[in-house]
Image (cartoon, rainbow, N blue to C red; front, side):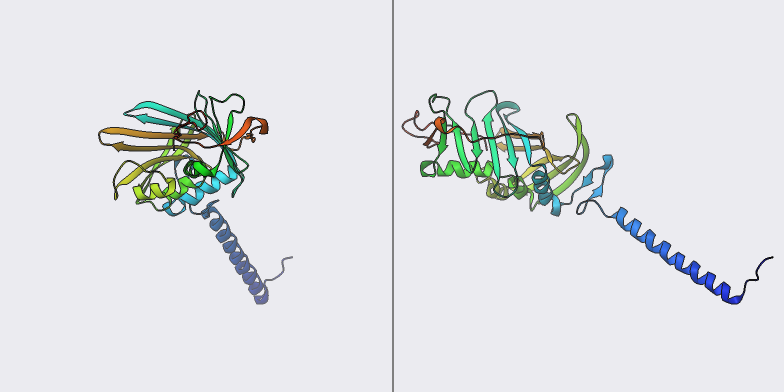
Amino acid sequence: MSTPVTSSTSRRLLIVLAALGVLAAMVLAVVLGKSATPDKAGGARIEGGFRELRADEFADAIVQAREEAGSWKFLQVETIDGKSKAVWEGVTVWNGDDDLAMTYKPQGAEGEFRLASGAWYWNDPASRAKPWIKLVPDGSGPWIAALDRLADPARDAEIFASPKDFRVVGAENIGSSEAVHYRITVDLEQVLDAQGVPLPGEAGQQQVYDVWLDAEDRIVKIVEPSSLGATSLTRIRTFFGYGDDYEIPVPPADQVKPGKFGPSPSAKAEPSASPAN
């Protein structure tokens, strides 16, 4: 026998249904809100599932990605009119702040620079008994400053911090993987401030960089074209091996002697060379 539906029962049913409707709307709003919120700041999605960085978050994102990785290898190729003239390679280990170590050397040749425990060393091919020269500020100050800028993981971010133009080219194949291609235009003065070394060109000129980032916002490749008169200059840097274990020890004490690095009357005691920057 069915129970008659009274007016009070109907009201209770309407109240319950209304409450369920409100609850469903709240849940839907939460779900939609979560799905619309990227896993990192900003970040519209583009083809391939990559996150598209905005100009105002690009610099911070690449520094954060490097710090999270903690280590990487790099290869630097210098070309003049399309022909390779110098190739440098190295390793960076960075645990944040000033905990930084690095190696930097010409590929297939002697003459390694090494940053370990806060000091720079240079492996002198001409010295066999004590092949490692610990660079001292007196006489090597400008070289140490230049090497410090070279090693700084935030140096690239400083270059890209205030771009004049910022474009997302799209996802592209780089080697065996995909990366997002950005084309960034900056003032030449901004590059000079970040690198601390003169670049070809005049005041007011701009520099265009092509930069590729992986899905973790880590730099995969940077191409820096420039020119000096009719001569075309290009620097190509590639980065790989992020997060791998690398050891960059301080050279053995019995193989180290203090010294200077740079032009001097005595080439044997104070060798002269010019690392790429």
